[in-house]
Length: 522
Image (cartoon, rainbow, N blue to C red; front, top):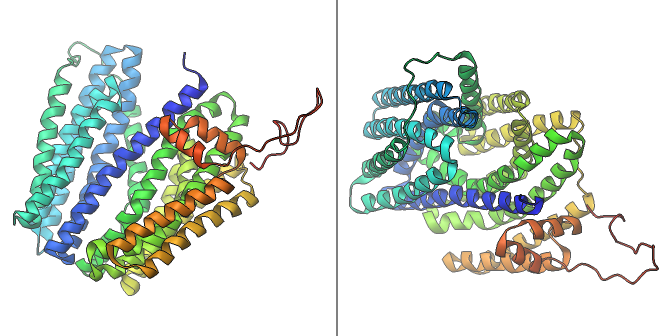
């Protein structure tokens, strides 16, 4: 049987893998956007960003939501060895995926016909969505049998190959249409692989079986779809639609680049939160009264990490954008500095939402997210026409603040109050400001790519030194993290953290100052 420490290490190892699997494709996509902007221009990048967002919205809401719900139901049915129910759920899942793919494709084709230019991009995106729907239909059954690992690794390879093939298409002179054609080709190859894997295991037939009640299945699918839709509105660039409607493709490109740059640290934080939450949710189920301590520790770590990420993003992000994309994207660099503030808002919202989702309480999550979506749409409709991308940033920040604030209030009212020391928070803030200030000062002295590289080095050195003497988090949290982070990551963190203070011997039965049970800096 695994010990608690082994379980924690496994969870964080999974979190690091999830973060890598999420960030690496985002990094590859950023490289692709640099190539598109430099070779084809900002206007074309704006068109590509809009089509990619709408396609992602369709696939997430109308296809991948069915995948998540199907995996949950199929896995539970597999565990219960109910072959009749398994047969019907498999059949319904496949039909739902195909229906979602058809609806997505029809909507994308309709948008393409309604536009006056770049129609081929919408048609290629429609074909890719249809192929993806069939691929996820096969993948959901395999995931239910063998977990996410095998499918995730195959998709990670596809997500790495797709941008590389798209970049090759651009340099081959195939234009932006070549980018979307490359994505379609990769989707078809992945579909063939997933279909072959799925067919290795025979799915039970529905012949001669009683059909189970379909209403609970439909209800679960609807809840997942609604949850994904809210996430897409609040956290996934809905503002692009308003920017495209009221302004130019170049403005769309500016906001998209800034959003993608900030999206990488956001995804790192979200992936690590997701890895830590199963244990917290399980503790909540066993002993609701003990969840405050576990959630508080997670919150302290999340806040500390995101203060550092915010400082690095705001200090280095703008120059990184203009160095990679060119001076024409100076506006995008300014937007990075503003959007970086979402890193101070979203993580705690993610933490609370993951807690309630993991314990089966979706209602507060949907209410908070729904309110954020309403605020996002209202602010975007009001502010984007007069203020363009700056108005889109305000809409994004407002939605994040409302959504995170409401779910925090709900959590507080349920008796879960975070224990975060103001003194420790001030120390961590000072560490982040010192590292960010060092990076900013370096950029003032050195320009170009060399300046960016030296700024990253300066940021890392100042961060390492200040963490070594002051600690990123409190003593107890430092010891917990050092013992929880897997392998060399834990050893590096322990090496960078302050050593425990030496204590004088005490009389038998006495307790020295700072020993377990004494005051803690939390």
